[in-house]
Image 1 (cartoon, rainbow, N blue to C red):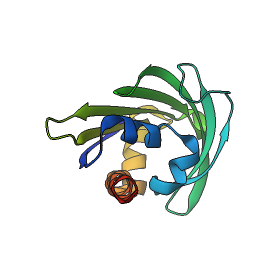
Image 2 (cartoon, rainbow, N blue to C red; image 1 turned 135 degrees about the horizontal axis):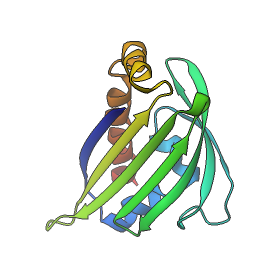
Image 3 (cartoon, helix red, strand yellow; image 1 turned 120 degrees about the horizontal axis):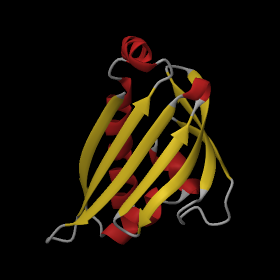
Image 4 (cartoon, rainbow, N blue to C red; image 1 turned 60 degrees about the vertical axis):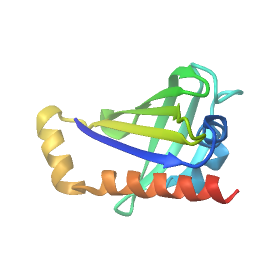
Length: 149
């Protein structure tokens, strides 16, 4: 398993950040590895909602089916994903209002490659620090998108 944890301060209230990160149609605005999404649920913001997302890392596209397993608007969301070859992922969003009116956005991504411990080692060799770098760039994009609106 590999875990990426990135945090950023965004000069906007939590509701504005929440509305952006929880809107699947906005993923292309801020997620650097996002390529497309297909909703499988009428309301993608309710627990149990699912969507299929195509992502791309190092030029290789792959599909992940996400299910929203936990949601407390506008503070917390947890998505569980199933990818190729029995890989699994978990993404957590945490939003905290600060006294000065900004939002601290916590992003956690846990990736479980297929193949157990050997798969984890192989994954680290193949992708290295790409997931953390992409997460940092995605959150920087999110900040720019929200603060420039």
